[in-house]
Amino acid sequence: TLSTPGPLTLSGARSASRNAKFPNVAGQAASKLTRLLQDALHRTLTNQLRWRQVETWLAEGLKPEEIDGGRDINAWYRSAEDYDTMPRPGDATRWWSGHARVALAIGPREGWEEIGRIDWHAWATGGEHEILLLRKLKQDE
Image (cartoon, rainbow, N blue to C red; front, side, top):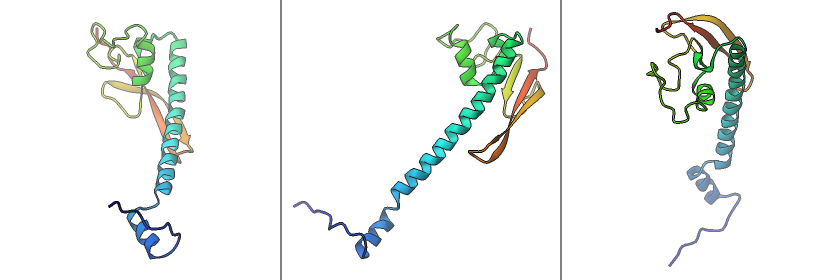
């Protein structure tokens, strides 16, 4: 025979034991969704700053292959010329960054010098953040 759950009660021993087994799933889901939305907003604001800087460099005459703006930005500009994502001659790196002269980064890189910073406050996370603007010290011949 099939067993069926007992009647739904809003109080009493049965509901208390049931809550112990199954914590507030809706509350946990709402908390996770809030964190996910905060993270998405944080990434969106960061990406807007990165895109603005890349557009500034392009306006100054740099070519897309001379800019390492991160995977999403590099792929956006470079995939149109090489949608199979194959490396360029002389570029053994992934994501089209081997010929970069300038870069956006979250920390220092060996062989690069800092030429500026983009500082910003993320109200969604409550933190202070920075994006480093870097220039390659020596260009490969």
